[in-house]
Image (cartoon, rainbow, N blue to C red; front, side, top):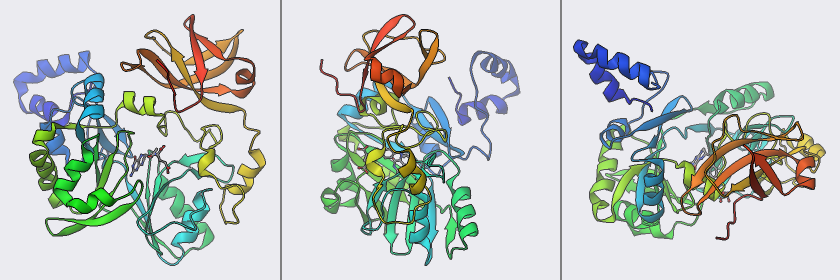
Amino acid sequence: MVLCTNQFDDLLACPHNWQALSEAVLNHKILSISRRTRSTPFSRRVEAAGVKAYTVYNHMLLPTVFDSIEADYWHLCEQVQVWDVSCQRQVEIKGPDSTRLIQLVTPRDISRTAIGQCLYAPLCDEKGDLINDPVIIKLADDHWWLSIADSDVKLWVKGLATGYGLEVEITEPDIWPLAVQGPKAEELVARVFGDPVRNIRFFRSRMLEFRGTEMMVARSGYSKQGGFEIYLNDAALAEPLWDELFRLGADLNVRAGGPNLIERIESGLLSYGNDITDANNPFECGLDAYIDLDADIESLSLPALRAIAGKHQNLLVGLIFDQLMEIDSGDIEHDGHDVGSISSHIWSPRHRKHLAFAMMKRDYLAAHTAVKVNEIQGTICDLPFTIVT
Ligand code: THG
């Protein structure tokens, strides 16, 4: 368990509570929160909503649990939730060479991207290894955002811009994404931003007004339950926006939530740092669909990716076990040899199966359809999971 900031402050503020603090320190894992673990303009509302656990993502707090992972999961699949995903930081690239720089860092062809369009895309280095897997957003012909996963992309693109002598300005602007996810998300976001919300297509966006300020609203988000992301651009509007979503969503049973481990695994959404690292290339992670191998584009990683296409040694697959599993290291062995390792796993209350993502040796996959973990047999399948129950 992680104590949240306000609980921690309460304990620190009362000297007679040092005993309680000591016990808390002994009995819990505590995240010490300082300026390096940045809070967000929504943090006070997140705390008031009873956040139970955070993770740290792009050096910023990301709320992960409010009730329990399972209760949060069912609520997300049936109702609507508001997520403080401010940690999905924007790396802004502006200027005459901005499009060239964006194309350099990704092997996905960005040449036909419309203004306001979002693209999920791998960022790869010169060897083809994964730097990040952001959502790329085109705001204007010379203005882009990389809505990044958890790695220091700003440093990488600044280094490239310097090395290539590009005319660009690279910043991390004051933008705090707020996601509204779940089957009732469209109704709720339309109540706050108006009916134009209903016409936004998947991975497209519109500039819409809240209290006289225009901000980007996109149909996107880190779940497969449907929903929107609001790119808040004025910290002073954070609490008014949060409060309006909860006021107008009361009859929709809106609650605070966050990216949910059960939902993302069932949906096959990958997490950089967990399922993907800079030791992997996009083929190993099943991201082939987001690489344009034949495109005539200037992309730093494409020569290497063309050379390794089809020759990668590992592949991220799904594992399905019929019972709840205890998984320690996640290492998977066969006949005394390492054949893979589990990167994320959960008990799926919907399917009543234990589901895992595992990076497996392709040699092993060619000859086997099952694994044994703790003596328990699991079936290997492609991602995303297609489970017939
Ligand atoms: N939204 C925004 N930024 C983000 C995330 C997000 N940055 C970090 C992290 N999430 C990046 N990872 C993903 C992974 C999957 C998707 C989005 C971001 C996703 N994929 C869709 C799918 O798999 O069906 C669509 C992909 C496509 O067709 O382009 O949504 O969530 N702003």
